[in-house]
Image (cartoon, rainbow, N blue to C red; front, side):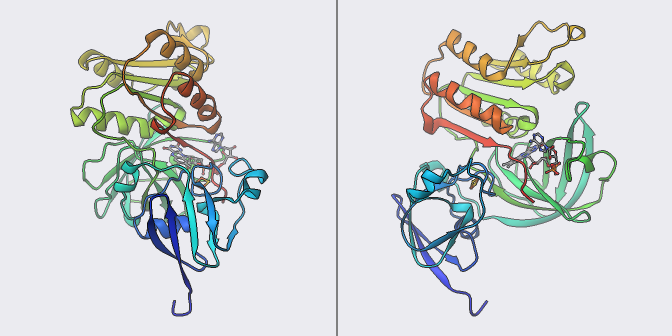
Length: 346
Ligand SMILES: Cc1cc2nc3c(=O)[nH]c(=O)nc-3n(C[C@H](O)[C@H](O)[C@H](O)COP(=O)(O)OP(=O)(O)OC[C@H]3O[C@@H](n4cnc5c(N)ncnc54)[C@H](O)[C@@H]3O)c2cc1C
Ligand code: FES
Protein backbone atom coordinates (compact mmCIF):
# COMPACT_ATOMS: atom_id res chain seq x y z
CA UNK A 1 0.00 0.00 0.00
CA UNK A 2 3.08 2.27 0.33
CA UNK A 3 2.75 3.68 -3.20
CA UNK A 4 -1.01 4.22 -3.18
CA UNK A 5 -1.95 7.90 -3.47
CA UNK A 6 -4.66 9.37 -1.23
CA UNK A 7 -6.73 12.44 -2.07
CA UNK A 8 -8.93 14.66 0.10
CA UNK A 9 -12.69 14.76 -0.48
CA UNK A 10 -14.84 17.56 0.92
CA UNK A 11 -18.65 17.17 0.91
CA UNK A 12 -20.71 20.35 0.65
CA UNK A 13 -22.91 21.79 2.07
CA UNK A 14 -22.23 19.66 5.17
CA UNK A 15 -18.48 20.40 5.32
CA UNK A 16 -17.53 16.76 6.05
CA UNK A 17 -14.02 15.76 4.91
CA UNK A 18 -12.46 12.33 4.29
CA UNK A 19 -9.77 10.71 2.17
CA UNK A 20 -10.07 8.43 -0.83
CA UNK A 21 -7.37 6.06 -2.07
CA UNK A 22 -6.37 5.76 -5.71
CA UNK A 23 -8.55 3.03 -7.27
CA UNK A 24 -11.18 3.23 -4.48
CA UNK A 25 -14.65 4.63 -5.20
CA UNK A 26 -15.72 7.67 -3.21
CA UNK A 27 -18.63 5.63 -1.77
CA UNK A 28 -16.32 2.81 -0.61
CA UNK A 29 -14.04 5.40 0.99
CA UNK A 30 -17.03 6.82 2.86
CA UNK A 31 -18.02 3.31 4.09
CA UNK A 32 -14.43 2.66 5.22
CA UNK A 33 -14.42 5.86 7.27
CA UNK A 34 -17.92 5.41 8.68
CA UNK A 35 -19.35 8.42 6.83
CA UNK A 36 -22.95 7.91 5.74
CA UNK A 37 -23.83 9.50 2.41
CA UNK A 38 -26.95 8.70 0.39
CA UNK A 39 -26.71 5.40 -1.49
CA UNK A 40 -28.76 2.40 -2.58
CA UNK A 41 -27.47 -0.36 -4.88
CA UNK A 42 -23.72 0.57 -4.79
CA UNK A 43 -23.58 -0.62 -8.42
CA UNK A 44 -24.43 2.40 -10.61
CA UNK A 45 -28.04 1.24 -11.10
CA UNK A 46 -30.34 3.18 -8.78
CA UNK A 47 -29.17 6.86 -8.81
CA UNK A 48 -29.52 7.30 -5.03
CA UNK A 49 -25.87 8.41 -4.71
CA UNK A 50 -26.16 11.05 -7.45
CA UNK A 51 -24.16 14.16 -6.49
CA UNK A 52 -22.48 17.11 -8.22
CA UNK A 53 -18.75 17.53 -8.74
CA UNK A 54 -17.79 21.08 -7.80
CA UNK A 55 -14.04 20.69 -8.26
CA UNK A 56 -11.45 18.03 -9.07
CA UNK A 57 -10.45 15.33 -11.57
CA UNK A 58 -12.42 12.08 -11.60
CA UNK A 59 -13.15 9.03 -13.70
CA UNK A 60 -16.56 7.33 -13.71
CA UNK A 61 -16.61 3.54 -13.93
CA UNK A 62 -19.34 1.86 -15.99
CA UNK A 63 -22.89 2.73 -14.84
CA UNK A 64 -26.47 2.57 -16.08
CA UNK A 65 -27.81 5.63 -17.93
CA UNK A 66 -31.06 5.02 -15.99
CA UNK A 67 -29.08 6.10 -12.93
CA UNK A 68 -27.23 9.02 -14.57
CA UNK A 69 -28.35 10.43 -17.93
CA UNK A 70 -25.91 11.87 -20.44
CA UNK A 71 -27.39 15.34 -19.82
CA UNK A 72 -26.75 14.98 -16.09
CA UNK A 73 -23.20 13.79 -16.74
CA UNK A 74 -22.63 16.83 -18.97
CA UNK A 75 -23.72 19.08 -16.11
CA UNK A 76 -21.08 17.65 -13.70
CA UNK A 77 -23.35 15.13 -11.98
CA UNK A 78 -21.66 11.95 -10.78
CA UNK A 79 -22.49 8.67 -9.04
CA UNK A 80 -20.42 8.34 -5.86
CA UNK A 81 -20.44 4.52 -6.17
CA UNK A 82 -18.69 4.77 -9.55
CA UNK A 83 -16.38 7.74 -8.96
CA UNK A 84 -12.59 7.31 -8.82
CA UNK A 85 -10.52 10.35 -7.77
CA UNK A 86 -7.45 11.66 -9.59
CA UNK A 87 -7.06 14.79 -7.44
CA UNK A 88 -8.57 16.34 -4.31
CA UNK A 89 -12.34 16.68 -4.81
CA UNK A 90 -15.16 18.95 -3.68
CA UNK A 91 -18.56 17.32 -4.07
CA UNK A 92 -22.03 18.73 -3.46
CA UNK A 93 -24.39 16.17 -1.86
CA UNK A 94 -27.82 16.57 -3.44
CA UNK A 95 -29.65 14.38 -0.91
CA UNK A 96 -28.74 14.05 2.74
CA UNK A 97 -30.36 14.41 6.10
CA UNK A 98 -28.97 15.05 9.53
CA UNK A 99 -30.35 11.75 10.84
CA UNK A 100 -28.47 9.82 8.18
CA UNK A 101 -25.18 11.63 8.75
CA UNK A 102 -25.39 11.21 12.51
CA UNK A 103 -26.24 7.50 12.44
CA UNK A 104 -23.27 6.13 10.47
CA UNK A 105 -22.03 2.66 11.30
CA UNK A 106 -18.65 1.68 9.81
CA UNK A 107 -18.92 -1.16 7.31
CA UNK A 108 -17.18 -4.42 8.26
CA UNK A 109 -17.11 -8.13 7.33
CA UNK A 110 -18.80 -10.62 9.68
CA UNK A 111 -18.26 -14.37 9.28
CA UNK A 112 -21.00 -16.82 10.19
CA UNK A 113 -23.10 -19.73 9.05
CA UNK A 114 -26.57 -20.66 7.83
CA UNK A 115 -28.97 -21.54 10.66
CA UNK A 116 -32.17 -22.30 8.73
CA UNK A 117 -33.98 -21.94 5.41
CA UNK A 118 -37.79 -22.00 5.63
CA UNK A 119 -40.54 -21.66 2.99
CA UNK A 120 -42.89 -18.68 3.53
CA UNK A 121 -44.70 -19.12 0.16
CA UNK A 122 -44.15 -21.14 -3.03
CA UNK A 123 -41.26 -18.77 -3.99
CA UNK A 124 -40.36 -16.76 -0.86
CA UNK A 125 -37.87 -18.14 1.63
CA UNK A 126 -36.78 -17.01 5.08
CA UNK A 127 -33.03 -17.38 5.51
CA UNK A 128 -31.61 -17.19 9.04
CA UNK A 129 -27.88 -16.85 9.66
CA UNK A 130 -25.83 -16.64 12.84
CA UNK A 131 -22.70 -14.48 12.88
CA UNK A 132 -19.61 -14.91 15.05
CA UNK A 133 -20.10 -11.35 16.39
CA UNK A 134 -23.11 -8.99 16.47
CA UNK A 135 -23.57 -6.76 13.40
CA UNK A 136 -25.04 -3.38 14.39
CA UNK A 137 -27.59 -1.98 11.94
CA UNK A 138 -30.67 0.23 11.74
CA UNK A 139 -34.04 -1.29 10.83
CA UNK A 140 -34.36 -1.22 7.03
CA UNK A 141 -30.65 -1.60 6.21
CA UNK A 142 -29.04 -4.39 4.20
CA UNK A 143 -25.83 -6.41 3.91
CA UNK A 144 -23.89 -7.89 1.03
CA UNK A 145 -24.22 -11.59 1.78
CA UNK A 146 -21.66 -14.05 0.41
CA UNK A 147 -22.16 -17.81 0.31
CA UNK A 148 -18.52 -18.76 0.86
CA UNK A 149 -18.71 -22.20 -0.84
CA UNK A 150 -20.46 -20.88 -3.96
CA UNK A 151 -18.49 -17.61 -4.03
CA UNK A 152 -21.67 -15.63 -4.80
CA UNK A 153 -22.59 -12.27 -3.24
CA UNK A 154 -25.94 -10.44 -3.30
CA UNK A 155 -27.55 -7.56 -1.37
CA UNK A 156 -30.24 -8.60 1.15
CA UNK A 157 -32.15 -6.47 3.64
CA UNK A 158 -32.46 -7.68 7.19
CA UNK A 159 -36.02 -8.77 8.06
CA UNK A 160 -35.52 -8.83 11.83
CA UNK A 161 -35.47 -5.77 14.03
CA UNK A 162 -32.02 -4.81 15.34
CA UNK A 163 -31.73 -6.25 18.84
CA UNK A 164 -27.97 -6.41 19.17
CA UNK A 165 -27.80 -10.19 18.74
CA UNK A 166 -25.78 -12.32 16.32
CA UNK A 167 -28.78 -13.55 14.30
CA UNK A 168 -29.91 -12.01 11.02
CA UNK A 169 -33.10 -12.99 9.15
CA UNK A 170 -33.79 -12.32 5.48
CA UNK A 171 -36.92 -12.67 3.34
CA UNK A 172 -35.75 -13.66 -0.13
CA UNK A 173 -37.65 -14.17 -3.37
CA UNK A 174 -36.48 -17.15 -5.38
CA UNK A 175 -35.79 -16.83 -9.11
CA UNK A 176 -35.50 -20.12 -11.01
CA UNK A 177 -32.14 -19.10 -12.57
CA UNK A 178 -31.04 -16.86 -9.73
CA UNK A 179 -27.37 -17.46 -8.92
CA UNK A 180 -28.01 -16.81 -5.21
CA UNK A 181 -31.73 -17.26 -4.64
CA UNK A 182 -32.01 -20.64 -6.42
CA UNK A 183 -29.54 -22.00 -3.83
CA UNK A 184 -32.29 -21.60 -1.22
CA UNK A 185 -34.06 -24.72 -2.44
CA UNK A 186 -31.90 -27.59 -1.30
CA UNK A 187 -28.37 -26.36 -1.96
CA UNK A 188 -27.94 -24.34 1.25
CA UNK A 189 -27.87 -26.24 4.54
CA UNK A 190 -27.47 -25.31 8.20
CA UNK A 191 -23.79 -24.80 8.97
CA UNK A 192 -22.80 -23.58 5.49
CA UNK A 193 -20.33 -20.68 5.80
CA UNK A 194 -21.45 -17.13 4.94
CA UNK A 195 -19.94 -13.65 5.19
CA UNK A 196 -22.14 -10.60 5.78
CA UNK A 197 -20.60 -7.23 4.83
CA UNK A 198 -22.40 -4.16 6.08
CA UNK A 199 -24.48 -2.45 7.16
CA UNK A 200 -25.48 -0.53 4.02
CA UNK A 201 -28.49 1.53 3.03
CA UNK A 202 -30.16 4.80 3.94
CA UNK A 203 -33.78 3.57 3.92
CA UNK A 204 -33.79 3.00 7.67
CA UNK A 205 -36.40 3.91 10.30
CA UNK A 206 -36.19 7.52 11.48
CA UNK A 207 -37.00 7.62 15.20
CA UNK A 208 -38.88 10.03 17.40
CA UNK A 209 -41.50 11.24 14.92
CA UNK A 210 -45.25 11.45 15.35
CA UNK A 211 -47.17 11.62 12.00
CA UNK A 212 -48.42 8.54 10.17
CA UNK A 213 -46.00 5.81 9.08
CA UNK A 214 -46.63 4.56 5.55
CA UNK A 215 -44.95 1.32 4.41
CA UNK A 216 -45.28 0.19 0.79
CA UNK A 217 -43.76 -3.04 -0.48
CA UNK A 218 -44.05 -5.77 -3.06
CA UNK A 219 -42.59 -9.28 -3.17
CA UNK A 220 -39.35 -9.52 -1.21
CA UNK A 221 -39.67 -5.80 -0.40
CA UNK A 222 -41.37 -7.15 2.72
CA UNK A 223 -37.99 -7.83 4.35
CA UNK A 224 -36.82 -4.30 5.31
CA UNK A 225 -40.40 -3.11 5.90
CA UNK A 226 -41.02 -5.99 8.29
CA UNK A 227 -37.85 -4.97 10.14
CA UNK A 228 -38.97 -1.32 10.26
CA UNK A 229 -42.45 -2.30 11.48
CA UNK A 230 -41.14 -4.57 14.22
CA UNK A 231 -38.59 -1.96 15.30
CA UNK A 232 -41.34 0.69 15.38
CA UNK A 233 -43.54 -1.56 17.54
CA UNK A 234 -40.63 -2.40 19.87
CA UNK A 235 -39.86 1.33 20.27
CA UNK A 236 -43.29 1.97 21.83
CA UNK A 237 -43.79 5.05 19.63
CA UNK A 238 -47.47 5.67 18.83
CA UNK A 239 -48.18 6.52 15.19
CA UNK A 240 -50.94 5.58 12.76
CA UNK A 241 -49.47 2.84 10.51
CA UNK A 242 -50.63 1.90 6.99
CA UNK A 243 -48.76 -1.10 5.57
CA UNK A 244 -49.47 -1.60 1.84
CA UNK A 245 -48.29 -4.84 0.24
CA UNK A 246 -48.59 -5.77 -3.44
CA UNK A 247 -48.75 -9.41 -4.55
CA UNK A 248 -50.06 -11.27 -7.59
CA UNK A 249 -52.44 -13.76 -6.00
CA UNK A 250 -53.38 -15.09 -2.60
CA UNK A 251 -50.65 -17.73 -2.64
CA UNK A 252 -48.06 -14.90 -2.64
CA UNK A 253 -49.23 -13.54 0.72
CA UNK A 254 -47.52 -14.53 3.97
CA UNK A 255 -47.19 -13.42 7.62
CA UNK A 256 -50.97 -12.97 7.61
CA UNK A 257 -51.45 -14.25 11.17
CA UNK A 258 -48.87 -11.78 12.48
CA UNK A 259 -50.57 -8.93 10.61
CA UNK A 260 -53.98 -9.99 11.98
CA UNK A 261 -52.48 -9.85 15.48
CA UNK A 262 -51.13 -6.32 14.91
CA UNK A 263 -54.48 -5.17 13.51
CA UNK A 264 -56.21 -6.49 16.64
CA UNK A 265 -53.75 -5.24 19.23
CA UNK A 266 -52.23 -1.99 17.91
CA UNK A 267 -53.90 1.40 17.90
CA UNK A 268 -54.65 2.68 14.36
CA UNK A 269 -52.80 -0.04 12.40
CA UNK A 270 -53.97 -1.22 8.97
CA UNK A 271 -52.42 -3.91 6.77
CA UNK A 272 -53.65 -3.38 3.20
CA UNK A 273 -52.64 -6.21 0.85
CA UNK A 274 -53.61 -5.85 -2.83
CA UNK A 275 -53.69 -8.60 -5.44
CA UNK A 276 -52.91 -7.68 -9.06
CA UNK A 277 -53.85 -11.11 -10.50
CA UNK A 278 -56.42 -12.58 -8.13
CA UNK A 279 -57.86 -15.85 -9.45
CA UNK A 280 -61.52 -16.93 -8.93
CA UNK A 281 -60.21 -19.64 -6.54
CA UNK A 282 -58.69 -16.87 -4.41
CA UNK A 283 -62.23 -15.69 -3.52
CA UNK A 284 -60.52 -12.42 -2.64
CA UNK A 285 -62.58 -9.64 -1.10
CA UNK A 286 -59.74 -7.22 -0.39
CA UNK A 287 -58.08 -4.60 -2.61
CA UNK A 288 -57.17 -5.50 -6.18
CA UNK A 289 -54.93 -3.83 -8.78
CA UNK A 290 -51.44 -2.37 -8.62
CA UNK A 291 -50.22 -1.32 -5.23
CA UNK A 292 -49.48 2.29 -6.27
CA UNK A 293 -53.14 2.74 -7.31
CA UNK A 294 -54.29 1.28 -4.01
CA UNK A 295 -51.98 3.65 -2.10
CA UNK A 296 -53.36 6.60 -4.10
CA UNK A 297 -57.01 5.63 -3.49
CA UNK A 298 -56.46 4.96 0.22
CA UNK A 299 -54.42 8.08 0.94
CA UNK A 300 -57.03 10.23 -0.83
CA UNK A 301 -59.87 8.62 1.13
CA UNK A 302 -58.16 8.70 4.52
CA UNK A 303 -56.56 12.20 4.54
CA UNK A 304 -54.12 11.35 7.36
CA UNK A 305 -53.06 14.28 9.58
CA UNK A 306 -49.56 15.41 10.53
CA UNK A 307 -46.17 15.01 8.94
CA UNK A 308 -46.08 11.61 7.28
CA UNK A 309 -42.99 9.39 6.76
CA UNK A 310 -43.07 6.82 3.95
CA UNK A 311 -40.80 3.84 3.27
CA UNK A 312 -40.99 1.79 0.09
CA UNK A 313 -38.92 -1.25 -0.93
CA UNK A 314 -39.10 -3.76 -3.76
CA UNK A 315 -38.74 -4.06 -7.53
CA UNK A 316 -37.58 -0.84 -9.26
CA UNK A 317 -40.73 -0.44 -11.47
CA UNK A 318 -42.92 -0.62 -8.36
CA UNK A 319 -40.86 2.07 -6.59
CA UNK A 320 -40.93 4.28 -9.70
CA UNK A 321 -44.74 4.04 -9.72
CA UNK A 322 -45.12 4.55 -5.95
CA UNK A 323 -42.87 7.62 -5.45
CA UNK A 324 -45.02 10.12 -7.42
CA UNK A 325 -48.15 8.81 -5.66
CA UNK A 326 -46.58 9.46 -2.26
CA UNK A 327 -45.62 12.98 -3.34
CA UNK A 328 -49.11 13.64 -4.70
CA UNK A 329 -50.43 12.55 -1.30
CA UNK A 330 -48.55 15.55 0.14
CA UNK A 331 -45.62 13.69 1.74
CA UNK A 332 -42.44 15.82 1.76
CA UNK A 333 -39.85 14.36 -0.66
CA UNK A 334 -37.22 14.29 2.10
CA UNK A 335 -39.55 12.12 4.21
CA UNK A 336 -39.87 9.44 1.53
CA UNK A 337 -37.25 6.70 1.93
CA UNK A 338 -36.86 3.83 -0.51
CA UNK A 339 -34.65 0.97 -1.66
CA UNK A 340 -34.88 -0.29 -5.21
CA UNK A 341 -34.05 -3.99 -5.33
CA UNK A 342 -31.97 -3.70 -8.50
CA UNK A 343 -30.41 -6.88 -9.90
CA UNK A 344 -26.68 -7.43 -9.49
CA UNK A 345 -24.37 -6.55 -12.36
CA UNK A 346 -21.90 -9.38 -11.71
C1 LIG B 1 -30.38 -2.61 -1.69
C2 LIG B 1 -30.91 -3.96 -2.10
C3 LIG B 1 -31.60 -4.74 -1.17
C4 LIG B 1 -32.14 -5.96 -1.56
N1 LIG B 1 -32.84 -6.69 -0.65
C5 LIG B 1 -33.42 -7.86 -1.03
C6 LIG B 1 -34.22 -8.61 -0.11
O1 LIG B 1 -34.37 -8.26 1.07
N2 LIG B 1 -34.78 -9.76 -0.56
C7 LIG B 1 -34.62 -10.20 -1.86
O2 LIG B 1 -35.16 -11.26 -2.24
N3 LIG B 1 -33.87 -9.50 -2.74
C8 LIG B 1 -33.25 -8.36 -2.36
N4 LIG B 1 -32.48 -7.67 -3.26
C9 LIG B 1 -32.24 -8.27 -4.60
C10 LIG B 1 -31.07 -9.26 -4.49
O3 LIG B 1 -29.87 -8.55 -4.22
C11 LIG B 1 -30.85 -10.04 -5.80
O4 LIG B 1 -30.73 -9.17 -6.89
C12 LIG B 1 -31.95 -11.06 -6.08
O5 LIG B 1 -32.08 -11.96 -4.98
C13 LIG B 1 -31.63 -11.89 -7.34
O6 LIG B 1 -30.35 -12.46 -7.18
P1 LIG B 1 -30.05 -13.91 -7.82
O7 LIG B 1 -28.57 -14.13 -7.68
O8 LIG B 1 -30.95 -14.93 -7.27
O9 LIG B 1 -30.43 -13.70 -9.35
P2 LIG B 1 -29.41 -13.32 -10.53
O10 LIG B 1 -28.55 -14.48 -10.85
O11 LIG B 1 -28.74 -12.03 -10.19
O12 LIG B 1 -30.44 -13.08 -11.70
C14 LIG B 1 -30.89 -14.19 -12.48
C15 LIG B 1 -32.22 -13.87 -13.16
O13 LIG B 1 -33.25 -13.83 -12.17
C16 LIG B 1 -34.21 -12.91 -12.56
N5 LIG B 1 -34.27 -11.86 -11.57
C17 LIG B 1 -33.38 -11.57 -10.62
N6 LIG B 1 -33.77 -10.53 -9.87
C18 LIG B 1 -34.94 -10.13 -10.39
C19 LIG B 1 -35.84 -9.10 -10.06
N7 LIG B 1 -35.61 -8.26 -9.02
N8 LIG B 1 -36.97 -8.98 -10.79
C20 LIG B 1 -37.22 -9.82 -11.82
N9 LIG B 1 -36.39 -10.80 -12.18
C21 LIG B 1 -35.29 -10.97 -11.49
C22 LIG B 1 -33.81 -12.34 -13.87
O14 LIG B 1 -34.37 -13.13 -14.88
C23 LIG B 1 -32.31 -12.54 -13.85
O15 LIG B 1 -31.82 -12.54 -15.14
C24 LIG B 1 -31.95 -6.44 -2.90
C25 LIG B 1 -31.22 -5.67 -3.81
C26 LIG B 1 -30.71 -4.44 -3.42
C27 LIG B 1 -29.94 -3.62 -4.42
S1 FES C 1 -26.25 4.27 -8.33
FE1 FES C 1 -24.83 4.60 -6.72
S2 FES C 1 -25.76 3.63 -5.04
FE2 FES C 1 -27.09 3.07 -6.69
